[in-house]
Image (cartoon, rainbow, N blue to C red; front, side):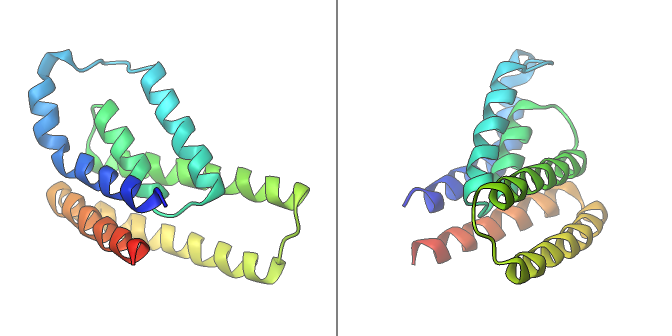
Length: 146
């Protein structure tokens, strides 16, 4: 199972992002173009199929390839996660059997969690937010491994 290792790699990338950004210095592309699109596409395919820790994976990709504040990247991650979820749900609804009661509960929980999480993330300092995400992702990966 590759998912726990993908989550751990994303956590490591997110944890090292400030050091990597300093090391990259001027060599960091102002418009990452293809690498950004390919990374977000790959994460979206993964998220549409499985979805576990998609936010951490997206945040690691965005943080590695875009120059912006963590809170703004987190907001973009939330929007991308919403789009991935809606497209995946539409695909499943059109092409497969769906247990609508369970889907409604998951959708309500995801919307409530996204709203509450975004509000909390805006109030946290970037370093606290970064380490909270890294700790959460690491715990999630360990649970997936077990």
